Image 1: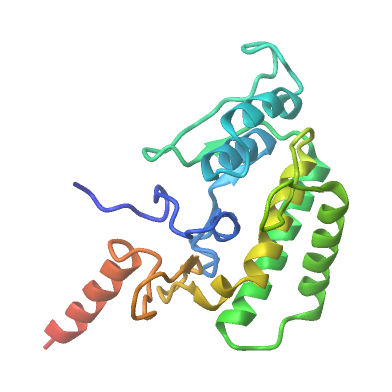
Image 2: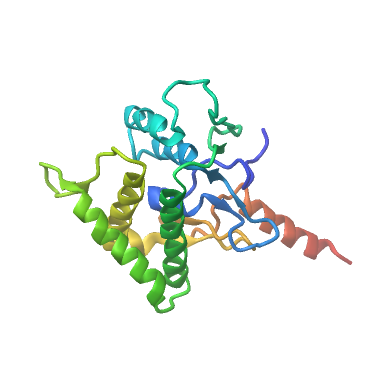
Length: 224
């Protein structure tokens, strides 16, 4: 059995917001950096995979993203899927909405990086995140159950951004934020919830970045 790599790894964040941040592999290494989800259709499929939308909700949104409700028609985008069912690519649609989604992701990176580095939250990205949360609350409705939760029912592609902003609001306001970690692997930059009993997890995946670090140490120990 081969170990997963950053190009085909399963979800490792443990929370939709962290998995959203992790949709770029090797985030902090410009030479290896690669987007793992691109285009509106790809994002909708991703949202279904991480549980932001149900399978039925995602399926209902796909025709809106493709601009072509009939499968196989002219301009139909192609789906490519990695061995773990995670990577997709699609024709560029809804450019403005996709850009808004990526702006939210960039803001999250900087806010979470500051948290991981025990640094002050950066004003610009924090304002982007704050405004996204405020807008999402305006688009959401509270569910008739306790504890109270606000939820967006997807009718447009833009609702994915709202759903993620609400999830970010919940995560950053909950005790779980104390368990948010950033992988120590050089160039990785992925975030995850450390649910280990000791609270000392260091890697996005022991079989990925953890293995690389062990191999690096072994190499340096064995050098004459």
